[in-house]
Length: 76
Image (tube, rainbow, N blue to C red):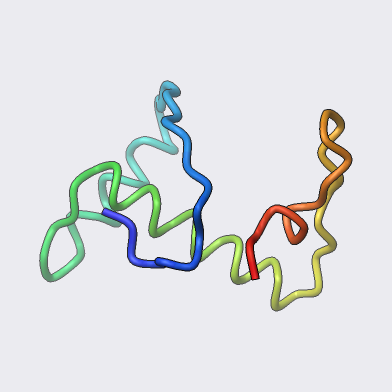
């Protein structure tokens, strides 16, 4: 489920989580008052990481294929 209606882009992403990173995600989601699904937990953690990076002043990387930054891809 996606909570930000301003974003029109989406993609299904499949990847393998193993070892410590998988355990950290599982521990985090199980520590929540209402345990989120694994995909919801991963979306939330990615969102938090991106917000934290933005607050630190991390600059968006250019997409080698399109030449767009992550900021350019976000509709206004």
